[in-house]
Amino acid sequence: MAKFALGSEPVVGSLSSSKKREYRVTNRLQEGKKPIYAVVFNFIDSRYFNVFATVGGNRVTVYECLEGGVIAVLQSYIDEDKDESFYTVSWACNVDGTPLLVAGGFNGTMRVIDCGSEKIDKSFVGHGDSINEIRTQPLKSSLVVSASKDESVRLWNVHTGICILIFAGAGGHRNEVLSVDFHPSDIYRIASCGMDNTIKIWSMKEFWTYVEKSFTWTDLPSKFPTKYVQFPVFLASIHTNYVDCNRWLGDFMLSKSVDSEIVLWEPKMKEQSPGEGTVDILQKYPVPGCDIWFIKFSCDFHYNAAAIGNREGKIFIWELQSSPPVLIAKLSHPQSKSPIRQTAMSFDGSTILSCCEDGTIWRWDVMENS
Picture 1 (cartoon, rainbow, N blue to C red):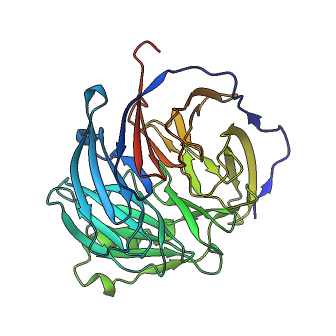
Picture 2 (cartoon, rainbow, N blue to C red):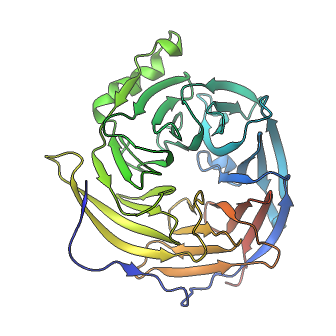
Picture 3 (cartoon, rainbow, N blue to C red):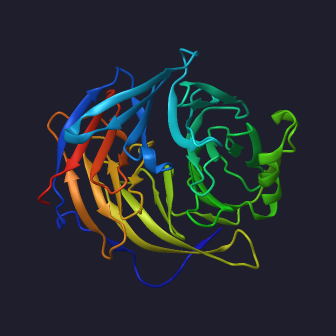
């Protein structure tokens, strides 16, 4: 278990000093009556940077942000299981460059949707319980990871339908895994967090031959020699409650729990003894009213800023790479009162989307003069 490094106290951002980028509401959509748990822009393909997807109930919907606050519906996919409730969706890419959507939720089956044909391309069965988050490897966009209530993280190849690795076992999570993320540049590394209050960093380096094998496998996916990764290379207890969102910021980590703040910290590994090391907590970004679990933050493409909603329908946007942290904007609207489950920042951060418990999607655009 990582120990806290002694030294300087973390720098806490001030909620009063705002850099003030002015945003205004340009659209509000009522998608349905069911909560919308996820909203995500397509950062995989530069042709579709202004396209986003949402999930709510057994529906996956694809939209495009157009000029003047317009949101156009492009596609809608309804799952055959009417009791399905999707919690997460991620953009991926087919071999021929066609955008794919990978969605998962309550029933534990992952659906890979081909946005070219608007049909299910594949279904991945493997998790023994619901799926809380799916993320795509930015450098190899046919690899996705899924975090599940079954206490495991799985690595999949969306081309071949293979479950390559399962991160679970002796050193694995001891409760639901709520969030997972690929390292932006180290292709071997992922991080996961969950209801056991820990964040674990895993390495695929010694299993990479299996990842490569998954691309050329011609037999049935079920015959693939899926490997268990039982021990993380680093384990951190930064939070004292559920950890429901973690994202890499370079080699640093952003994570949040249910105590109304995002924490930026540095894992310092000991090469000789895997799993051990120290943690240096660098900064804290306060988010008042963010004290219920399953609220996820998002960043723009270059990770300059993070946007996060709270249980009262407000959004806080923090500049990530300044010290002390600078609050860019606090967004609120008299009719936005429902908990915001996730935000999505556009490529350059000029548009912010939020999806809410009451089935609404809100669009905020930066005002030209700010």
